[in-house]
Amino acid sequence: MFVTTIALCLNRITWREGDKKTDCGPSWVTMPLSHQYEIFGTKQRPTKDIKAAIFTSIMRYLSLIVIGIALASLIVIGAVGSTLVNGAKEKYKAKLSGKNEIPKVKSTAKGSASFKSKKESINWKVNITGLSNITGANLYLGNNSLNGKPIVNLIKVSNLSKTTTGLLMNGLITPSDLQGPMQGKTLEALKSQMNSSQTFVNILTKDHPGGEIAGLVKLRQPTNPTTNTTITSNSTANLTQVR
Image 1 (cartoon, rainbow, N blue to C red):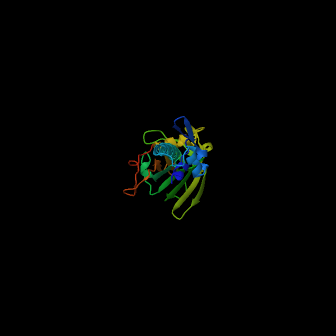
Image 2 (tube, one colour):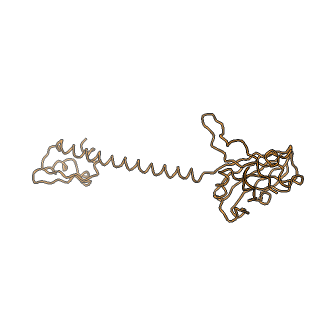
Image 3 (cartoon, rainbow, N blue to C red):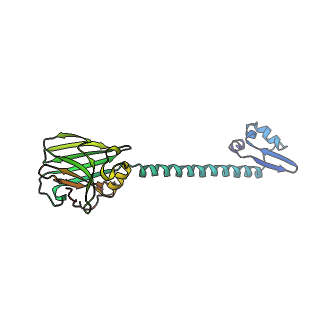
């Protein structure tokens, strides 16, 4: 019915008939149907022209609502996307081997390291097989073409336990744990270096004080949904031995 349609009209519509001015505002819709007809000085239903004007106003109002919702949605999506990108919990990994030392070390030991960034720390874990005793475990700043300098003493900030095949270490890195060239810097600065493959893990032993097994830290890329495989960086680069 017309009264149902007019109840949706939230904009104010002014209709002129001769010298008579009629205001069809929100208060008008609360009137009984008969009173609405009498406003126009007649017992007849409003004309088609009035209905068309009201319909146009309704459509204009609804269009503004739709546009507003669309803009709000874009803003929300943009904010969420920004959070996902900038606040992502990056994951990193490294394969530890004597082949990555310079010069290469003939060792049966091997290992893996994993890092996961949190809001106020970087959690890490190192699993070593073939070694029961180590003299040092550090995160270094550098790669295959740079002199590595220790920036985190992993043993100092870890829980170390022996396993049936070797050693297991885990812990977390906070800004206060950074040293050397990274001292006084933020975890974001450290992650920036890790994102660029500019850090590596080096495990020191009594027989190899410069490092027995090492591995370049690489950013773990998202899993490819098509092939269900993980995209990784190119082959592991050899690392400069630290003396």
